[in-house]
Length: 205
Image (tube, rainbow, N blue to C red; front, top):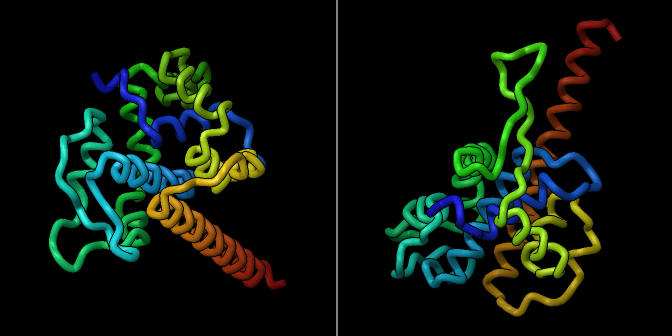
């Protein structure tokens, strides 16, 4: 059953919602990190491997988690294969919303009703589930992959140094996730500067 699924992306989303971060976690950053977390799990299952920075699809059992199965099915299976960076931007589009929706349907996330706006759902909140407790245990243990992904989102950045990650392919994916999040943040900053300049023109400043 999907409700019992525990994957790195789900654990990362739980941590992002449960643990105080050094800065607000942006939905776009989280989506990129979730796409990277999917690759980590697919690498672990042998469903994909790296040839340089290219994702080479493998053959194996379809993951039991529906979103991870969707990720496996989304791998480009014809030459030229897709790069890790291209995967993150393609797969990561609105991925945080997709995970929230599935976890809400599984009962892992709930939304309080708004008293003033009863027709609109309230903010997403984690429910007390075994999946949440497992994610908390993984986080508190300092598991390096989860710690590194969380650090990319500004969640306890020192936790990423718990211990070395031995898998070179996983390290490469995590590095690319970090680069993508940095690039997205730079894009947001440029837009803010451009918007501020535009507003100043209209105010005559």
